[in-house]
Amino acid sequence: VSASSKKASHLKRKIASGSLNENFIRLDIKKKKFSRGFRSTNVRKLKWNKWKQMKKASSGADKSNITGCFKCGEFGHWA
Image (cartoon, rainbow, N blue to C red; front, side, top):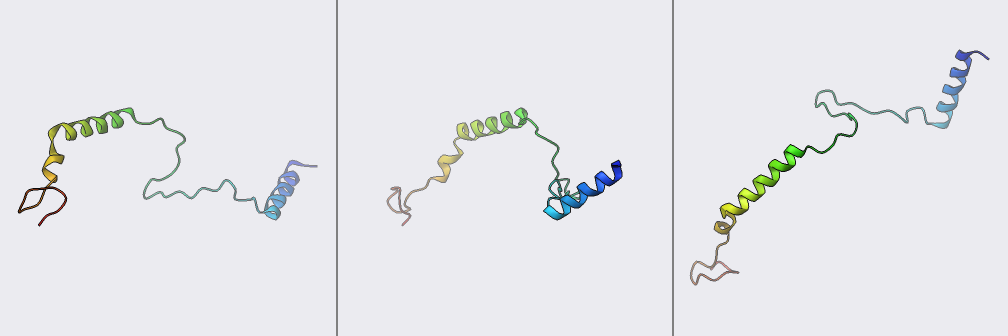
């Protein structure tokens, strides 16, 4: 039994079982979206996002968004 006949029979078995394209992955070359294996999380990006959250919380920007009633000044309604 030669190597080429072994490969051919193996290919025929895969085609018959329907598992020929099990390892097929479509690559989107334009968007560069394809798997490059597991990458560890980017610590720099995590630190930057944490810093931005802390900065936003300390600036008190959220307090200006809370408004009350225009007439009586109480919270929960606007008129």
